[in-house]
Amino acid sequence: MQSFGGSTELPPLPDYQLIPQPNLIHPIPDKLLTLILPVVAYWAVSLFFHWIDVNDYFSKYRLHTPAEVLKRNHVSRWEVVRDVIIQQIIQTAVGILLNMTEPDEFIGKEEYDIAVWAQRIRIAQRAVPAALALASINAQGLSQNLAKAHPMLSGVVAGGSYPSLSSRVIWSTGVEETVPAFASWEILLAKAIYHVIFPALQYSLAIVVVDTWQYFLHRAMHMNKWLYTTFHARHHRLYVPYAYGALYNHPFEGFLLDTLGASIAYKIAGFNTRQGLCFFTGSTIKTVDDHCGYSLPWDPLQHITSNNAGYHDIHHQSWGIKTNFSQPFFTFWDRLLGTVWTGGDVSARYERDALKAQKQVNADGNKSSITNTSSEATLTSPPEPYQNEMKDAKLLKEIPASKIQPQVPSGKAELQAAGSREQVLEDQQYGGKSVLLEEAEEEKEAQKAVRRSNRRRTASSLAQSDSLRGLRERVTAHGRTGGILGMEHSH
Figure (cartoon, rainbow, N blue to C red):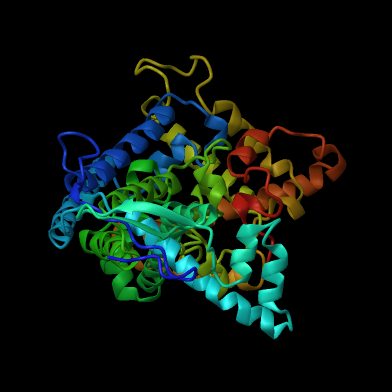
């Protein structure tokens, strides 16, 4: 029990009564929901991208063509689905163990916790007079001058003294008493801290922990040959990522990199169950979006940070596999430690890959398996998706050598590409050598095309052609200056 003994005495904390927190979605317990919702979100978002993929919606925003998905990947879709389900089973088992360490949650203490923050704000004001004294300002005199016109400001200057603020409270014992009260601004600030600022700091801490954990483990998987060939090479059999392949990993890697990292972030940030639900689900959606294969201008997740589908797609290419390690939120570790791709514009490489894959499909006679045509489609059928764009890609030979960039720029980017290709060779079981042989053939054809173009065309006539717009738009960042996919032209 407290009494109003002076103007600087702290307002008392209110009584509270705890009751069990109701389930967010009845009758599913919140702890169970934290296990279910990330899995549901994974497949819901993945199937959305798969739906627009098979129906050929938003094709101009694709990073790769359907032919590339078919010919450049070294793993079947069934194997991808199987391994993702295995990882989600492990993820769920770890989540069950994590939930066993968490106490049951209650509500009813919110006003008490807000009052605790208000008390801290009141205590912090006691430092104001001393701070003013350092500037040779008389806090007491200034407080008196402000008292009539600005009573709240006067109280702050006086060190948190509000003699006019009081309230009547009835304690749980039935006793009624007059006690000091909080200023309205103190309560508003305390609510902002409790409901917004402190949770934002928790989420920021969790993001930093996850990004740090994943960056250094992910980088280690690429720097150590045994770790790469034993575990991480499996994920990189998807040279053309798609949404539901986001969690296609070796089970041990999936546990170590994704499940354990998110669990550690959850504990360090001090999340409650519902905060964890939002964090786990949000992280899952972000990871799927980073592998979706689309550069959608209206997708907010691809604008919040530079770590988006285009940024991560470079990491899946044979020449960029040892760059752009950051996942899943921000790119600060790549930039601080110099592992961001520095090769600038890579649109010509994307276009050549698309053309090569389409040629392979045409040669195999498998067009109908990857486009929106029936199994009875013939060469006389109406143009299939990307058919016109593939014709446009052939115009690469008409572009001056200075613009096609058939070679990786010299300097750091050249070393990055060389290291990446060396790592591709390490995965001998799943076509590492064949991947580089195909790319060497593409490079050779591109060089021949450039030499022919220098003899046949002038740069002025080529500048008037915009036939390549479709393919280039798919791999160009959303209005950002600098290089392709949000990458700067830095070396």
